[in-house]
Length: 261
Ligand SMILES: Nc1ncnc2c1ncn2[C@@H]1O[C@H](COP(=O)(O)OP(=O)(O)O)[C@@H](O)[C@H]1O
Ligand SMILES: [Mg+2]
Image (tube, rainbow, N blue to C red; front, top):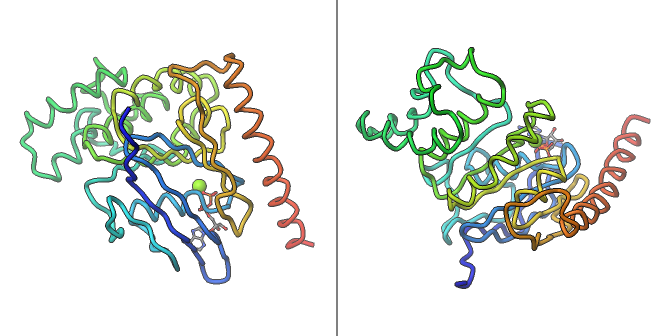
């Protein structure tokens, strides 16, 4: 295997919102074609960090670079998938998926052709002409994922992409999507609060500590894909991440109690 190439580098990133210091220090390197999961207590700044990489938010201090260049707003090299699908109800599945290409003035036929591959791989074949209202939550999320992949950015940012789904749908989708990420061959950052999702999908898990947060652990998940949770090695990783995370969740809960007291 060739040496890893740094894609996204975050150095001493700090984020202050008025009187809330959300992130004290986020320092990490994410390599080209790596799948990194970010996990941490609620409110520790995971989404904020993702939005800074997306270019929606600017760090108070520190620097994030992509391919060595400082981030200066959103760009076509990044695609983002939110927790709540964000589909346009008046557009069909196909029209939602080709939206990004349409904005880039890609001809309609070409856009459809490019969409077709991801429609197939996300299991949406046959639903091209359906409207979002007629789809289940899991299918809507697949449309959002297919849209990001069709747009073909180098980096995909996922903010709790399975958060709005019921447990069965979520488990099914995670299992199903494992091969998709391998096929997509992209740099992927997924924010999640689920240890199971993180260890099943990611090459590496970054754990954010309680607010004001910093990255307190960096765990490489050395298990080949596709993975199953019953794999004893994966179980060990799951325990390790859970142990570190629980301590941080306890810390952040007691901090909140102190504020309320
Ligand atoms: N635009 C904003 N203005 C003020 N405070 C914000 C803003 N965005 C996030 N925060 C605060 O920053 C902290 C981190 O938020 P967030 O990144 O959404 O956490 P997470 O995604 O880890 O749950 C929270 O305390 C949140 O209330
Ligand atoms: Mg969040």
